[in-house]
Length: 129
Image 1 (tube, rainbow, N blue to C red):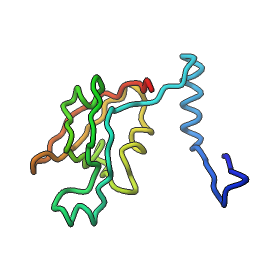
Image 2 (cartoon, rainbow, N blue to C red; image 1 turned 30 degrees about the vertical axis):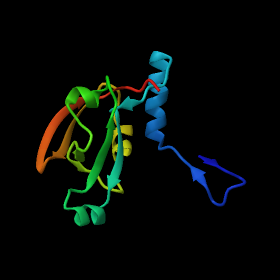
Image 3 (cartoon, rainbow, N blue to C red; image 1 turned 180 degrees about the vertical axis):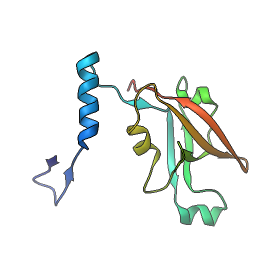
């Protein structure tokens, strides 16, 4: 846990299981690795979805070249609605769900394109940022 002394009740905490996995990975490989999908997105809230007659989820703004998302065929304008059956919403965003996965995990990603729901399997890569 970290707290900013000059801030007003601002704190930061990591779940212990995330730390345990990170330390285990570091001890085995000598580095910290994070899973990576390869998109930039904006969350579509329920209200915004209703106003625009689209599903709630993550609107794909950009698909980065040479990433799992690009290889899986995701495109700008797609709306990711579920990851491994978990609905995408303001309370459950893509980054949160991906952050709980490991490099090399395969996820099932449901997305909406041109009025149709599609599903694709994606193998997460290591973030090279």
